[in-house]
Structure formats: C-alpha cells, structure tokens
Image (cartoon, rainbow, N blue to C red; front, side, top):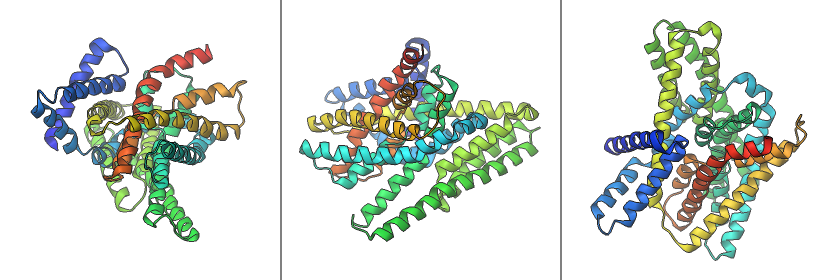
Length: 413
C-alpha cells in the first residue's frame, strides 16, 4: 500500500505542476481530468502493454479507495476545511445550513431513491428498491472536499459561500448516518417491526450525529487549550493539532460517534479560536500553513485516485444510459431539496430563486459518494450503483465545478 501511495503522490505532484504551468484549471478538476485521460489511454493500449495496464490497476486496487478515504485522509481534509470557516458568518446562516444538511438530505434521498428505482425498472435493469435508496443516501449529501476545493477559485457572494460550505461540511456526517440507517433496514430483511426500525435509527442518529458534534466540541476545547499552552513552540503546536485529528478520529470510531462531524466541529473551534488577534504569532502561522499544505496534498492525491479508479467500472450501454439519467434525477432532487427548506426561511433578496439555482448547481459530489458506493460489496446491484455514482460525480466536478463561476456572474451581474 505504501508503494501505491508513493506512486499516486508522485503522479499528483507531476499533474499539479502541469496544471499550474499550462492548463491553469482549478487544481482538483485539472488533476482528475489528467488522471482520467491517462487511465483511458492506458486501458485502450492494454492489448499492447498488458503489464503496464495491470500495474496501474494494481496501484488503485492496493490503495483501497474506500479505506484510504473514509478511514484515512477524510479526517485531515474535513479538519483543514473547517478551520477556515468563520463561525460568526456561519451563525448568520445557521438555519439555512441546518435545514439543508438535515431536511434537504432526507428529501433528496427519497426523491432520488424513488426515481432511480423507477427508471431502472423501466429500462429493464435489476435494482432492488433498497439499493435505490442507498444510492439516494450516498449521492444526496454534497461533498465538502469537492465543494471547498472548487470554491477556493470561484468568486461568489460571502453569504452564498457560507451556505454552500456550511451545508457541505455538516451534511456529509448526516448523509453517512442516513446511509447507515438504510443499511440497518436492509440487514433486517427489509421487513422490520416499525417500532424496532424507528428505535434503531433514532439511536443511531443520537449516537453518531449528536455524539459526533459533542465529541468534536470537546476535542476542539482540548486541542485549543493545549496549543495555546505551547504557543511559543510552533512545531509542538502543529504536532498537537495532528494528534487531535488522528487520535480524535480513531476514538470517534471506537465510541461509535460520527468522526466526520467531530472533525468539522473541532476544526471550526480550533481555527476560529486561533485566528483571533490575541493569538497572533508563529504557532498560529505555522499551523495555518501546515494544514493548508496538507489540504492541497491530500486533495491532489484524492482526485488523482478518482480519475485512475475509472478502470473499476464495467461499461455497458444500459449502465451508461441510467448514469446519464441519474445526473438529471440528482439535479432535480437537489433543486427540490434546496427549494423546499429555503422556502421556510425569510430572505432579504428579491429573487431567492437565483440563490436556489446557485445552491443547486454548486452542490458538488465527490470521493465520499464513491467510497460509500464501494462499501456496498461485490454484486450486480452494487456494480450498477458504483457506475451511476461515478457518472454523477464526474459530471458534478467537471461540468458543475467548471461552470459555477460563470453561472454566478450571469445571475448576479
């Protein structure tokens, strides 16, 4: 696994250099596009260079995408992203973020699950309804990694940016809880006692979501207090921040609370506490620089891996057709799941539909959706889910990611 990681890291560095010097695209999009093209060319030439093709396939397989993301770099990426979210700004948009991250995810899961099941049935593809709703759960949350990476290069109104950032950071953890809840239903054979299912899902939500937020606040307090006590030693302060992320995420898994939510909350707490004027100094500077570099490195590796992992898909006309249809279904569900919660709030703008349009198009999906799809095992239904998940993710990052800036200009200029 270390060899595979080293090769992917080297590819990410090379592609980053090419993108910086010549392509000039948002880094994550540029890296993923180059990785896709590379893997497609290698696949086409596998008859001529079979050993070279198998070498690259083994790199992705040995990397274990799901474990690498969910149990590896996810904690670092969420913490790094949350560190730069201003709590005062987030508080102003708290009701929008809360509704989008909870009610919005549930609405989208139901719409996507129902429509994708009907579409697959009409197209003659075998997709059990439980798998359709699992797809709805894994694709409905916007991916904070993809969203934050793209927004770095997009000029967008601050209130809109906070809505998109805040939602993506929190609905990731909520989406995983919904996904796990549907898996509970599946494990009960699809016919559990109503009271039993409600108790299990309610218990899961309290343990994972609420527990994750509380544990994250505790981690943040411990981390900030420790860092503040050694602010004259920047290197030790960085080491403490790493320990909070690595140790905190491991403990969250042991005590069965949401590690992603814990990382978001602790990152926000430490980031906002450190970035006050009173804490200006070498420790704050080094911590911010360290986590910014780490964020860029892991983002590069992740999006290169997404591109290279395309060889995991088995192409078929039926899967391709459903994948294209899934893109439309997810966008429709996203629009409805934003519009309904947003209509419950009071707004200052004269045409809130513009904000809904930006939130719809800015709701990017990424590696977390692919990782959850890979966790479904190895059968015909999970193979189909992985295919249509990939279709939505690629469209989301490449098409939506490249055009969100232009859409903002068109609607607000």
